[in-house]
Every structure is written in C-alpha cells, then in structure tokens.
Amino acid sequence: MKYDDLNLKRIREVPIFDVCSKLGISLYGMGKFTKRATCWYHDDKHPSMHVNKTKNIYKCFVCGKGGDVIKLVQDYDNKSFIEACDWLVNEFQVVLIEDKPSVQSAKSVVEKKEISAVSAISAGPKQSVVPLSPDLVTRSLSLDSQFCKSAVSAGYLSQTQLSSAANRYRLGCSKEGGVIFWEIDDQQRVHTGKIMYYLSDCHRDKEHKPTWVHHLMKDKLPANYELQHCLFGLHLISDISAISAGPQKIAIVESEKSAVILSEKFPDFLWLSCGGLQSFKPQLLEPLVNHKVIIFPDTDPQGEAFRMWTQVALEAQRLYNFRYPLRVSPLLESQASYDQKQRKIDLVDFLYETQG
Image (cartoon, rainbow, N blue to C red; front, side):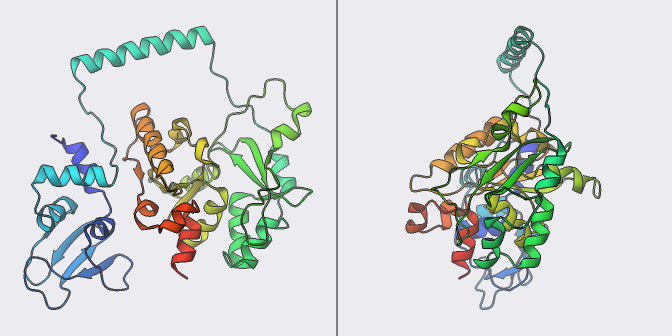
C-alpha cells in the first residue's frame, strides 16, 4: 500500500532498538541511548555501527552508511521501501490513519455523525461526572496495606521507593488491610476506588475478591451519582502538565500493581492502569490524545490479550484525534517463554524474572 507523509512519520517512530531485536541484530554497549552493532554493509571485525535511540537512526562510522528504521529494514532484510514499511506496520502494530477519506468514506463519516447526533438527542444530555468526596482519599492514605508491606518484603521496591510511589498514586488502606487504588481523573475528580488484597509475595489474594468504594457506600452516594471509570493514575497528568506543557510519555498496563512498581523503576514514563483485561476501553484513552502512549498487554498462551488490546487501540485511534500514534508493545509476545505465557505473566514479573 501507499503511505502518506503523516503515516510515514508514524512508521519512523517505531523504536530502533526494538527493530534491531526483531531483525536479530545484536546490540553492544551499556549506553542507555546509544549502542553499537557489527556493520552489515562491510566486513566489520569490530562493532562500528552506532544505533541512536534518541534520534531513532543508525550510522556506521567506518563506511558512513546509515538511515532511519525504514532504511534499516530495507537494507538489512533486502526489502523494497514499501515492503519495509509493510513489515514495520505489521510487526509493531503501527496504527495508521486515513488522512484524506474518499468521497464514500466522507459520506459514511457524515452519516455516522448524524446518527450519533440523533442518538444523543434521544438519549438526553451526556451524564457528567459526579465525583466522590476527596476527603475519602485523604482519610484513607496509608502504607499499612498488605500490598505496600509485601511490595517491600518481596523485593519489588525499597521502602523509600514504596513511600514515593504510594504518595504519587495516593494509595489508601481499608480496615481489613486491603489496598485502595483510587480512580482520580485528570481534573482531580474521584470516580471510585478499587479495594484489593495481596499475599506476602505481592501477588493477589484470589480467595479475597476485590470490591469497590462506591459499592460499599451506595447508601451515601449522591442521588445523581453514576459510575464512570477512568484510568488509574490519570490524575498525574495534570500534576506533570503543571511543570511541563509538552507531551508526556505514557505507558499503560493492566494491573495497578504494575503501574505503581514500574513508576519507580522507569520514571521516564507516566504509568497508568486500566485495572483488568476486559476493562481496557477506547473511551479511557480519550484524555491522552496529546501524549505519546505505549500499551503493554499481559501475555497468555493464545496471544488473546495482545490482539484484544490492539483492537482497542485501533478503535480509539479511529474515534479520537491522537497527536501521536498509539503503540501496542509486542515485548511479552516476542520475549516471554512458553511457561511464562502459560502463567499469563505481566510486565513487572517478566522483568524481575528476566533480570534474575
């Protein structure tokens, strides 16, 4: 297929380190942003090809050849320009958009908008968020939950890191020792809180089912309260935006536990959670339209989570005008072992098992 300038830009944003890994190119060096590889353009005895993560390009300082990720796939895998683009789109689930829809497509868009408008009129005004009292969050703040204790004792975080993460995500504690993961949106409105229970190894206590704050206080809710979920950690967007007006690098995972732990391990990203495999919905992504988003599904034997979340990303891209392409990471699909996929491992435990 043909690619316009906008979609070529999206393709060129595929991380070059990931492309090298997929192609089987070994990278050397301890640098975070630049690594070396044996140049494939000449008989290279020592790694002279420099691969730059920041600029997303490569260049050999012996023969002078280099380029972007498209050129990399072209030359290394002997593909044409279009074949290289097709390969990158398919391998990295690059979400493409139709810049100029055909007459028929435009007509369909208009028809859909008209139908939506009629539906909106029939259904009445959209229900606005009726938040819970922020005092609920303030009164619950605590490091005494079993989750907080086990995150440290099981070796996921140090006590200092745990304190920092708990403060960042405003973790609460229930009377029974469950951790409260509060859903607070980018306007600092409290939607609800999920109360979850953990074992001493920092894995969920599946004998103790999660519950919701709004369910426990249903007799005290405002008459017009209607639950609308938001991403766990969404409140952090407004906190960071107050410091930097630019787009943020946002990573989305399934579990709140993963978001909390990874926020300390990889602070360059703002880590958010949808709270469950089936809870990942296109509308949850709408507040992120101006940011750079990468999505990390859990893994499973059939790759169901990866396919499901890719479809959600595609639908969100269709519905909302994202400034940057949504990326669904194939990391676990390509790197997790057979045993790990059988256990439906998440990103946190994959990293900890891999790093030993």
